[in-house]
Image 1 (cartoon, rainbow, N blue to C red):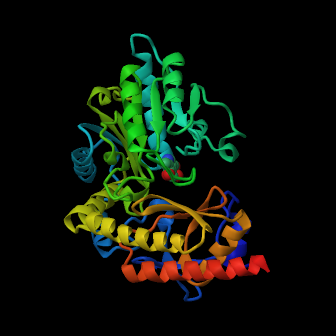
Image 2 (tube, protein in one colour):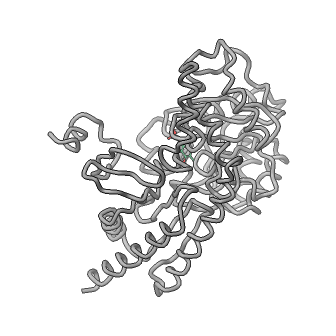
Image 3 (cartoon, rainbow, N blue to C red):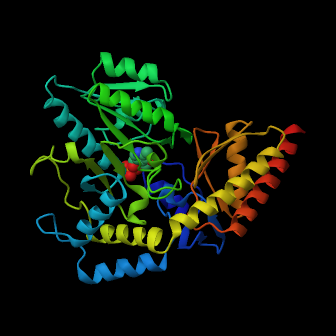
Length: 403
Ligand SMILES: *Cc1c(COP(=O)(O)O)cnc(C)c1O
């Protein structure tokens, strides 16, 4: 059996994989076992925010590995304390809980919401979320992920879940008023829901409603955070202070790391024994988290990335304008972009395969939306090569499907 066949034989089929055996990642590229090189425009699904095998990150990883790999939460974990301090400085006053993934970050928030809700004068229960949200796949949070193919076959949550249409303030107010949930949880840009940005004005008014009805306002920055949209967290473009912020994906620089930041009035909800996880966080992951922040701030990649994203947007907009309506919409923010084509799912899938054959990798979400999650390190020449190839292949495919 070759690797592809072995993969299919031994690994559960929970993902549709691209037929590529990756041998090496370096900078913005992945290399396969046949010496092909690919520009990676989805960065391990929003993880490798500054590219692959970043030498500075690897250096810091080695430094930590030489100290200790693991010590348990019985000790003070210096890289974790340092990272928590920096995350607080970059967001809201409060305290951090570290876990190992996005779903675990959401799980921690669900438990915090539960404890906080039960302690209110009029106890509150449940969580309101947006349609097409994605907050993780473990059993405790799967019902917060409102995508029909994902949650429906699994047991109901043992707390109420309310689904609200994005941008619909009336619907949100109705739920907050009548159902009295303990929290409202949302992504500032719905990621796997189709790269659908939530407007700053919705965020601000939703926050005001949460204050009015005593509901915790929680942003899931697991995909949007760590500089991906041009600011450290995507909620920053609205004038709001969240009660809780969830993070994961990009922060570990490629290692598993996630968690939540709980604002001052909810930072004491948990007491020893209420929650925990053996690896939360691995010192290696925490050291990588600090290294990612060094690269973003001391090496200026957050700002550089913002400029590089502007260039990518301008090239994509030009392409859209020349496409005679075939490119319907380009949406998102910074290095988180959804391209909606006037085409069906099989066209988009074929386009993905053709781009892959030319050395460009992107992801598809909601069957027909091209999802680009490029690294902040994407160079102009790479943008040019990608957009030109995309336009060529799209035109070639269009002609073929017309004939
Ligand atoms: C990926 C993602 C999660 C889940 O993270 P995992 O690490 O896969 O468990 C939760 N919320 C959002 C917005 C995500 O993009």
